[in-house]
Amino acid sequence: MDSAGLVVVVPVAGLWTSPAAPRPVDALAVEDRPDVAGWCATLDLAGASHPYAGRLGLHDRLESQLLRGEQVVMVEEGTDGWVRVVCPEQPSSRDSRGYPGWARRAHLGVAEKRAEPEAAVTASVRALLGAARSYAGSPYLWGGMTAYGIDCSGLVHLAARSVRIRLPRDAHDQQQATIPLAVEQARAGDLYFFARPGEPAHHVGIVTEPGVMLHAPQTGSFVVEEPLSAERRATLAEAGRLPGIR
Image (cartoon, rainbow, N blue to C red; front, top):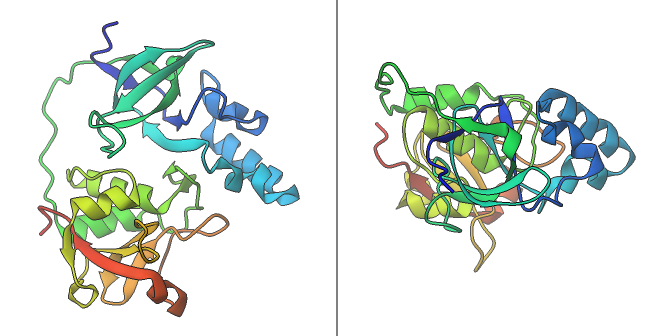
């Protein structure tokens, strides 16, 4: 099957762990014309009755989200309109070709040739922080990559992507891709990584000044810029610098 040149043709497409992963409450997200705003509102209503019926229940179901124009490679055609793909623009240690998962075939189409090359973007700390701060107040969503819902590593990935820095999608992979620093060396534009002893990073935030970070904390919260709490400092494992940032 020739899958070269496939891109996302809807505003936002879900990348799921399997075709069986979406629940009935996720129906608006997997329609041929997905309604992400309506889906997130539905999740919030469902979560009012039981947390795992809403956003919290997306753990181990939603891997990530793909944005309009994002490249994908189809590796397997499933049934009922599902395809297994890898996503080169979201690097992952799980597959050298890109982040793996399942998507709706209706959300993908043939890429159009660009008439002009994209303008160059300077990978500056100011531009990085500006992109990240544009998501301030956005609600947390496991696997989310939009203002309707975003997770900690999604926020970092999108901010880096905005300044043309190729960075993995998940926090533990982001830690491996950055230049390691002692926590006290961190400056604006660096990343704070949080982990329990002997475990990979489970949380990441963007340093805005020493001891202060912009991050998407957890389900039920919103993207916020705040000083490190005592609880966060207890799991602060390392800082990292994005390659190529100035």
